[in-house]
Image (cartoon, rainbow, N blue to C red):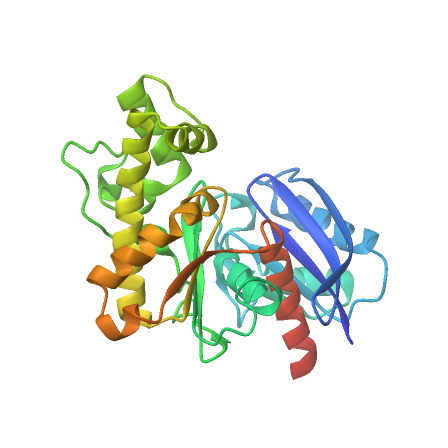
Length: 302
């Protein structure tokens, strides 16, 4: 099978791997993002990391938190990596490494990874909701990634759900947006308001599980908002499986039975009866493997 290289870039860390064409990671490296505001330096860092993998990859896939033009290989907007805004990254990396390069929005890479080698393996109709410091994700339909017109299908943080009275999201334009209600920073803000202590999400969930009524109320409020979002996802997309991932999403997955019950009560009945909710299985490797999958497809299409 073909061997490919994959890179997964976050706001603070860049990771690279050599991946066998069946989805096995052969070698991996990671290091902090050095200069997020300096495009040429960041490109050189990624190229250097790929070279250090050694081996002879046939293509490179790159997952990054950005709006991208896949046809042009250009980064349109990368708020956490501003040095790449407007940069033809695909072409620059291809020239530096002598490899064809595929760029993927990180939500798409994650669902590709889970569909290829994770909990969603072989599931033809799959939704993936990722909750961490933000909310993102992606969808598989008919066994194929749904990209959307501008390559942003699955940007679930912008879904609107009813906000509680008195909700004081930091930005008025985000009031009621899912990310402002259930992501990690939102949970910390809720803890600070209601408990006088900005608990980390993991501590909030742990205390809720141990029976702390105030922490339980915060978690259950966020769980209801997530439940309404999943009701809409199931009604609109009719998935067989809804995966929850990300540091906070995996905590929510511990309440899968309650989320499924909410879906059964409120989603489109025929869609609701078939849908299951489960934790994602690849953890931080989902984006890396999804980038690898994009590179494999690039080789196949050559």
